[in-house]
Image (tube, rainbow, N blue to C red; front, top):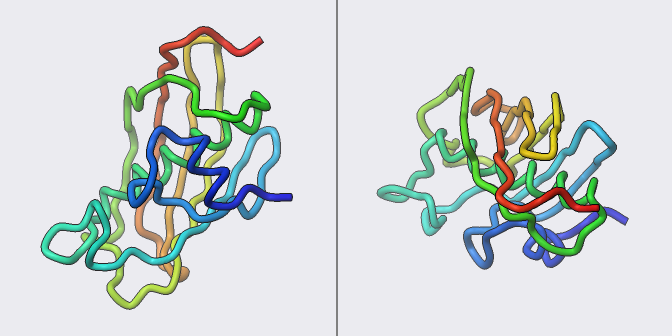
Length: 144
């Protein structure tokens, strides 16, 4: 069974409206795909009623946190931080206002005890919003 919103909220360091993902749609040892409802004007990252495309990086970071927890087989978020974004390409300025959903895909490129590297892409109703790479630095020891 794929994790839904309630389980995702336990696996990311955010809760309530700042938990941006609604469901995991697929995952394996090297990939994760997640979905969420399209952002609305009251979205916690909205500015003047619109969500900037750079917020796609937060969607990706949350997908990565979920993937790490699923890989580790844990029931809570691991302490860490988004340490670096690179090769980020924003394909539009804002999430489309007429969007129906958001999809997030992330691929694990490397993982050590101290952190991990992922490539990601975020789309909304089939329109590419952003892609890039991110590094997460862990602040707690590796899970045994």
